[in-house]
Length: 454
Image (cartoon, rainbow, N blue to C red; front, top):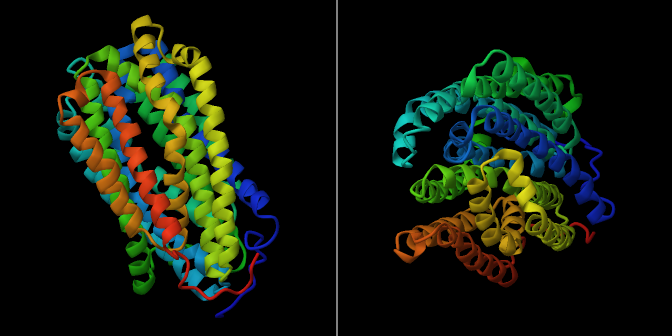
């Protein structure tokens, strides 16, 4: 079965509408995913205090993002391969790619669970985690990593559905998990008095339920989109190689991002517990910005992937331009809201006035430069959709991570919390310039044969 009609609308219709139809379910899905940790932070911060808040957020989030983010980057390679095959209507390749992706996620989940558990204590030590929050952070992370299988399999399964052009069902499965997470947070923390361990247990249980729902749904799909349980541990070596060649640079990119963030976290921790708690609270507010730009980035990756696979190059390029404009407008609006009402956001997570004041200093330094980051996300997403991940990785490793490391290693770069946060603006500006120059001076989609204009 070399060819099979997919009935897919991403390669047809009004471009901006198709992008938004794909974008909003991803955005709301990411919102509910973020709720896992946000609800933890609100309940933990108000019920257990700022030490517990700093333990389950901040450096803890940086460490989980480092390890799990690597797999998410690798999983992006699977999404690209599947979306290109789906756009080209190659049913046989779609089937093989789907089961190869599931097998990859199962293997990685075991590696990350064991590796994350073993690396928890040394990584917290490297990040100079304050002594008063170290035991709490260690307890939270060990449980989180041991139960991370659900999150990893869910990320891959959701990526498969998005490759098919379905961003709605991952949203519903995340809603189920988020509601369950809220219930379990209240039950484990407020009723059973499990402390930060209860927050971790609530998170991993809810993630496992979301993953199970996604796998069951994939097993009930029809035709080439259906996952067969008997083939979950099978893979195609050539397809796996293709997925890894596309995904590994993305995984490395994620690791380098998070290593630079770990360095930033280390600098933040050196300013004391109040600053660590303020940074943890800022990360929860900041998550809204990342939800929006990442949702647009995932949308353009799938949009370009399917149109690239279908040979519709002009449509892919026009989609990049329209997606960039929509993302810039969203970032501008969000930055304005942050700068106007940010204080009230910090008060959700901390009642300590010192923590709120430090948080506002952080916010006032980073929010004004949100727009500078937008082209990085959109252009790198477009390049990933075309199967080109080496250039984005190089720009990230040397432009963002390298610049931050150099800046933070200087006395002026770590003299105050504002100087530490300035590393974001400097690195984003440099890499945005690199992406703009590369995208408009290179025929990045030129290898494919044009089938139709729009």
